Image (tube, rainbow, N blue to C red; front, side, top):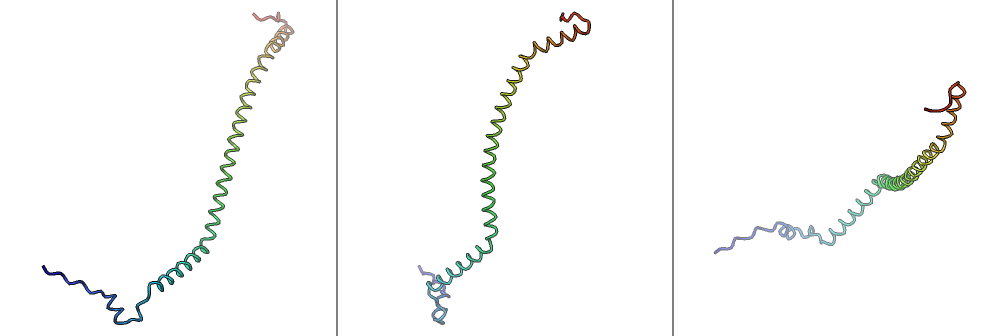
Length: 118
């Protein structure tokens, strides 16, 4: 069996022909890191208004959640008050019913009737 020849390594040939173009990986790494840092700084400055807006929206969401909890508690209190008021109103109507019936009898008597209900 014959082994196939390996394809030529063009990068190695270029580095052999022009040694000055062979940059060290550490040089490339430092340049990439500096470029990334500059890009990150520029993007932070560019996005600062958006980040502030998002922070305000998070605060507003928290405020709204607190307000909703307070309103729910207030609604529960109002429901309890309405139930108590309904019971109070029924008791008051039952208490006043005999008196109102008596007043109606007086009106009928004053109008010339017997005043009694049939």
